[in-house]
Image 1 (tube, rainbow, N blue to C red):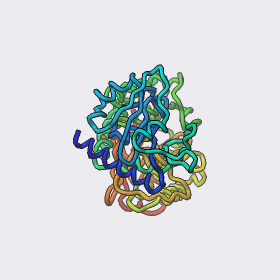
Image 2 (spheres, rainbow, N blue to C red; image 1 turned 90 degrees about the vertical axis):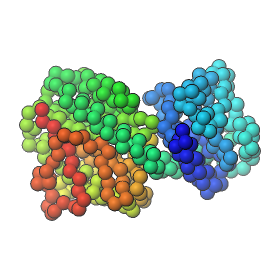
Image 3 (spheres, rainbow, N blue to C red; image 1 turned 90 degrees about the horizontal axis):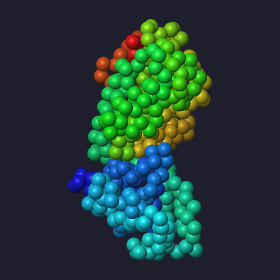
Image 4 (cartoon, rainbow, N blue to C red; image 1 turned 45 degrees about the horizontal axis):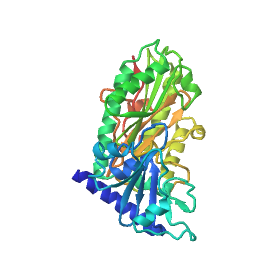
Length: 387
């Protein structure tokens, strides 16, 4: 509990600094990702398909308050220990309308002048009658992405468990299974580790070439499978993709998988403190060219900085965000029928893969289509698992 209190206090300090720099009287957090961040990983959601739930956090210069209903309040106090962690709770009977935010703010010593410019910030776009609000979504996303040491430890544990779930799933694959059955296997392997598969994509055979976001279908596996996981625990999310083939893969599949591994390898090797997301993007674009697919970057994003969302923000051509120690990144270069993806932690000097799978086959350097020697500090990428 002491560690949670210290973590929450550090995050409140960061959030209040943002409030001060933006001239705001209070900040409202509505997104489940923001609530997990500010509470140290508490589960405030109910409907996992929604980015917002039945709980909001209101932070003022001197107080921090959770606003919810009488259904959620007991669990938040008893199981999530949020009252003991220093949070005030305001609970409204589920069948009644909650008090207005303006009234709540006044009770806690903040009296916004509703005739002036916005005095309330929010992590998403909101329309609150008589209380103008500033959208702080981008700024708060960047606060969430700056992981504290305790969060880094949780991300490492999550990455190892997601890797184990992925390995168990891929070793359980058999021709004749449907994509939906494979997704169910993945769900079971993650859920029993306390992990929610917030993104679960499965494609087999020709569907791998057709869609970059293949939601599972009834299609039956014959020889080739791709499994994608974004797993969430205590609010944090890590991502990984693995490819399985029954029997030796054809040359075209091998060539494309090697090509995306080349791009991924270059992006990971460059993921060091001080580099910008725009520079990472340009490295990816140039690597696609070296691999023989100069326009492939146009067809799908290349990943970005992760945290309490699968991607807090993407690597874009003009991205100016710098990587720092404690950032976690999930790059995901792809081609029709091929993808390479892991989650890494940016270290003081070099990155570390959080979703590394012990025993998974790795591509040897000589297999990748480099015209010159590999960049320094390169990290081997996963090969196709041949069953």
